[in-house]
Amino acid sequence: MRILVTGGAGYIGSITVRHLLDRGHQITVLDSLERGRRGSVDGRAALEVGDVGDRPLLERLVAECDAVLHLAGLIDVAESQADPGRYFDVNVARPLALLRAMAARGAGRLVFSSTAAVYGVPDAVPITEDAPALPVNAYGASKLMFEQMIERFESAHGLRAIRLRYFNVAGAWPDGSLGEAHDPETHIIPRVLQAMKRGEDTFEVFGDDYPTPDGTCVRDYLHVQDLARAHALALERLGEGGEGGVFNLGNGRGFSNLEVVNTCASVTGRRVRVVMGPRRPGDPATLVASSERARGVLGWRPERDTLDLIVEEAWRWHQNRL
Ligand SMILES: NC(=O)c1ccc[n+]([C@@H]2O[C@H](COP(=O)([O-])OP(=O)(O)OC[C@H]3O[C@@H](n4cnc5c(N)ncnc54)[C@H](O)[C@@H]3O)[C@@H](O)[C@H]2O)c1
Image: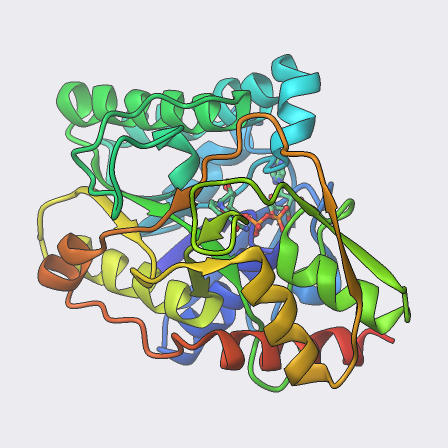
């Protein structure tokens, strides 16, 4: 299959591109390189440096592919709260050009990277796809808006789409050659590993008075390699004429912030002293996915689902970056 991958120079994109190439697919990456890196794009893929809002460019690229994987976007929750307009521009307004280019060519097949942030503060865990989508930050709202646009294009133009709602993505390519490099980094595993790599004495955890076993927030960590495989299964399902829809992707198991710090210490053999800070506004106590639908319909199963393995491979990547 010829696949256009937007955002393919970023963390999840670069790893997914390599996985798809290994499965025999042909890949073109479209990335502005605003947050991604040219060096992360596998040499077997074609790279177009450009913006998802560039309609003539999108029309050419869409005409040359069989399916689109749309990962490009901005992902920092705090930044989205401070500057929501930027998030609605990059995550909603600009990629409308992608949907319109697809509609102009009779629509086609699309897999979209959505997020657990669309659920906001859930009433119950594990969270199923039927839970109300009530995002509590502009990032989650922007991803939900794009999902809603996709649904309109499905009914009006026959677009066939799968929306994947990822929980917390972590880990790296097993040999440590590709991994997570956000700047600034807001995700806990890379932040703890960076603190340990720099030999920092302390690490701040946001809140220890949540209704969880140790009082710190609980999250569902999904290995980026398992996520890459889910994208391939979604694209292949659409290619075989299967129905689209929305799927949660997570391990179905939660780990607290303190468990994450302790696992990082046992994997790296380095220690940081945990300092308890205040809660971050809008952080739900527990976010754990029900991925039953993805298991049943896509035939997907997480294979690299221990926190030790996720951290071990992330650490290899962080050490390689020294
Ligand atoms: N990392 C996570 O834990 C997580 C969780 C849920 C959902 N997601 C979603 O997965 C996707 C990828 O996330 P990531 O962690 O790899 O982020 P990332 O920042 O590493 O990658 C995003 C890529 O998109 C590119 N990009 C941004 N704006 C662009 C534009 N206008 N035109 C073209 N390219 C543009 C950036 O340069 C970057 O390479 C995002 O859509 C995000 O919402 C990520």
